[in-house]
Image (cartoon, rainbow, N blue to C red; front, side, top):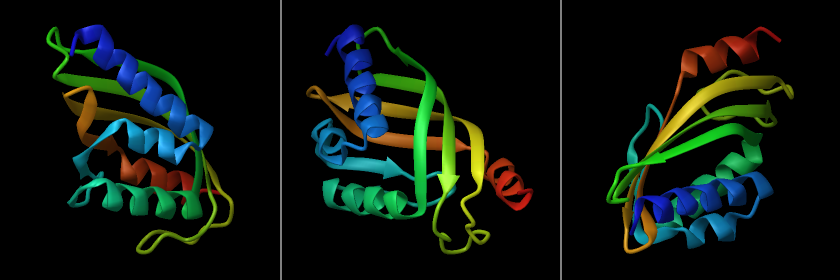
Length: 137
């Protein structure tokens, strides 16, 4: 995998996200993908990732903007920075009540790439910032 191929893969992954194309996102992943959820545990495998996407779709409507993707020279690791523009639709367990609040949140992700697919996704964002935004509305 080259640097440019990894960047194209991550762009395809986020284009699928923005299109609500969960199958397109899943096609970018290895079967044993490791998913590190922000301030949460690691989940492994496409079925766990699919369940995560279904949960997110139920609770949130999000679009990613200003996406910048970077990759190492060998393409084995990559990173992305973006801004999440979202609507909080349904109360997520352990979080404030949802009332359709809007939020704008800088975020980032790190990736391992193996055999032309994403083998690890690690997402980061500032949960206290998100919480303050949804409580302030």
